[in-house]
Amino acid sequence: MPSIGRDDVARLADLARIQLTEEETARFAGEFDSIMDAVASVSEVATEDVPATSHPIAMTNVLREDVVETTLTQEQALAGAPEAQEGRFAVPQILGEE
Image (cartoon, rainbow, N blue to C red; front, side, top):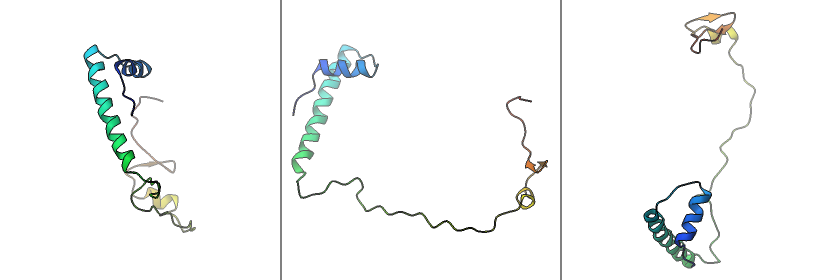
């Protein structure tokens, strides 16, 4: 697996618009090498007869069929409101707009 050097880290930092010190660049180069080694070890274990998965368990659709049901009337919806005005919920003004 190719190693990631200081120049590569500096280029990535430049692309991400992150300023790194020389010490950080050297440290991250070593950390990226460790990450690349870990990825390589996982790649060695993966075999062609094991299918790729995005989830460890099968995902199923949990949506239900749309069924038309009776809904609240405007009066019923506003019955529990602390205050209603012209058929709408009345709430305190918070942005100072008119």
